[in-house]
Amino acid sequence: MKAFLQRKNIEISLKRYGIDALSAMAQGLFCSLLIGTILNTLGQRLGISALTRVVATIGGVDYTVGAMASAMSGPAMATAIAYALQAPPLVLFSLITVGFASNALGGAGGPLAVLFVAILSTEIGKAVSKETKVDILVTPLVTIGSGMLFSAVLAPVIGKAAIQVGSLIMWATELQPFFMGILVSALVGIALTLPISSAAICAALGLTGLAGGAAVAGCCAQMVGFAVISFKENGVSGLVSQGLGTSMLQMGNIVKNPRIWIPATIASMITGPLATCLFHFENNGPAVASGMGTCGLVGPIGVYTGWLKGIEEGSKTAVTATDWLSLLLLCFILPAIFSLLCSAFCRKMKWIKEGDMKLSS
Image 1 (tube, rainbow, N blue to C red):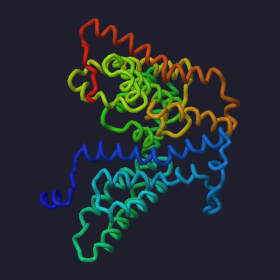
Image 2 (image 1 turned 90 degrees about the vertical axis):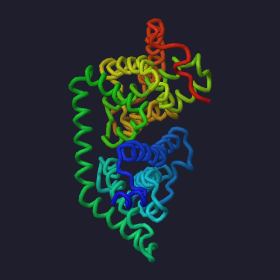
Image 3 (image 1 turned 30 degrees about the horizontal axis):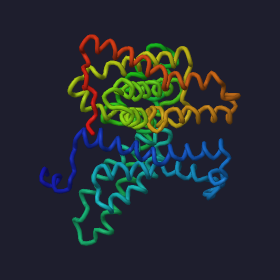
Image 4 (image 1 turned 120 degrees about the vertical axis):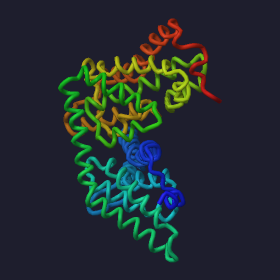
C-alpha cells in the first residue's frame, strides 16, 4: 500500500491537506467570488456598462460578468485544490463538476464542503488514473462519480457544521465584543502570516459581521505592521510586498526570531476590540475578504462592498465620513502606529535586532 500511494503521489499529510490544499482553495475563491464581487462593485459605482450589462440568463437568473465569475467559485476552488494535490489532467478537469456540486449542496458553508469533497475525490481519481487501457473513460467516471457521492452525503452536513461554527463565533463576538475582538483579530491575523490560508478559513466559516470586521482589522495589523516596522531593512519594495502582498514573507525570519512577531500581533490585539467595541466595524461583504487584510486592498474593498450591500437592502442609508474614518484608522493608520511603538520597545529590550526582518532578495 505504501508503495502504491507513493507511486500515485498520494501523500496523506497535514501539510498537503491543511496547507497546500487550503491555500489553493483561497486562490480559487479569490479568482472567482472575490474578483466577481470587485467587478460588480466597480461596474455599479463607476457606471461601467460592460460590467453591469447582463451577459447571460440561466434558469431565469441574469448574470453580469462579475456574477458569472462569482457563480464559478465551486469549480474554481475544486480545481485549485486538485492542482495543489498534483492531480493528473483528467482528474483535474473532472473536479470542475465536483466543485460545482459540492459548493451548491454545501449551501452557505460550501467552501468547507468543497475542501473535503475535492480532496477525497482527487485522491480517488489519482488512485485509478492510468491504471486501465480506457483511462479516458475510467478516470473521469470514477472521479466525478465519487465526487457526486461525497457531495450528496457529506457536503450538506459539512456545510451546516461550518455555518454553525461561524455563527457561534459571530454570536459570541456580538455577546462579548471586547474579548472576542481580541481573540478573533489575533488568531485570524496570525493565520494570515502562517503558511495557511486565513482567507479560506474565514470563507469556510462564513465569517462576516462584527467578527468579520475584527478579522479584517487583525489581518491588516499583521500586514501593515510588518511592512512599517521592517521598512529600514527592506525599503519601499518591502513596504509594498508586505503591505499589499503578504506578511507571510516574514515566516523565515519568524522561525529564526519569533519575537519579531510581537509588534504586529500586539497591534492586532488592540485594533480588534477597537473595531468591535468603539467603531462597530463590520465586514458584510464576501466572507473571504475577512481573511485577506490589505492584500490587494481586498479587506477594505470587502468592507466597502458590505456598505453598498447594506444600502441596497435598506439596513444602511449611506456611506458616511465616520465609515471612511474607521476604515482608514483600523486598516492602515492604527496598525502602523501601534506596531511602530511596540517595535521600538522590543528593539530597546534587544528582543529585535537590526536585520532580523530583512527579506531575502
